[in-house]
Image (tube, rainbow, N blue to C red; front, side, top):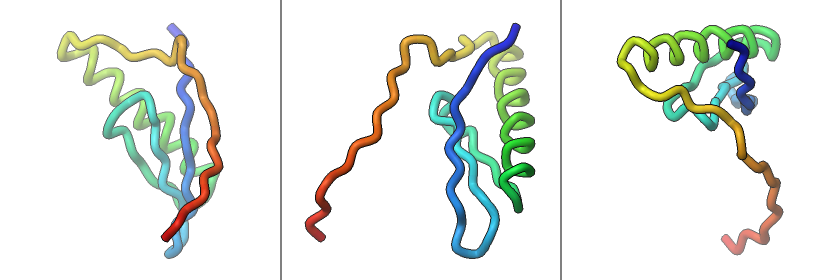
Length: 76
């Protein structure tokens, strides 16, 4: 079964990229380059899903997920 998951990459001040998988809480990884970060994300997602399956938990999907980007005024 093929599933699609969005990932978010954040460039870190010390270098490299942190990757977050919004639909999989706690699924976070890191790579020195964008390419490595994406590969690490694939591995992290696969391991996360394997763990859910092993524990008899539901596999989340992104079906019905809507994504928006909001711009707000920050009064700080």
